[in-house]
Image (cartoon, rainbow, N blue to C red; front, side):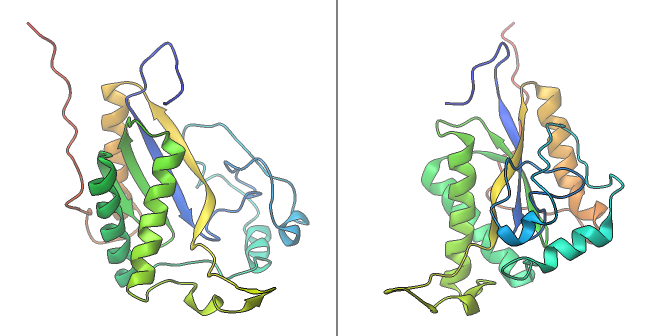
Length: 215
């Protein structure tokens, strides 16, 4: 269940990033509690913040951020068009299997925005299922960005390709119709704001309808 509060949680605006897009110690802030990689620790501890609004345009040391990305174990992931299409098929499969309702979705080259309605599963589980479904579909079609990093011996086992997604994700709870509609508009406009040609439209999206009160 979602956390209990004085107001009813109706949905969540969720962002999960491709590997390397937003580091846990990003100088603009992050949603991480700690830094997992020893290589990244020299660039500082986790910079967890609780702001509800985007901090992407916050002034910061760009050179430091770029240097930290070069210290990653694997190269940052940038999804191409075919990988983006596989991600949509993966999302659609998860929607079909779980019954989760997605009101908006924008798949960018290095991160994904979604507005997800309240579900019987915790939002963490829904996010993991969506990331897993997308990864499975990319691997099924030989489109995994990290396919060349699998197969190396690791003890007695064969090393599996790492996930192309970041471990954690960012979320904002939405507890009113106005919050949901504002988030949907933000997600729908995100591709255009980042220089893509048009809004995205997916067949797994369920349009949001404002509940009507009984007369």
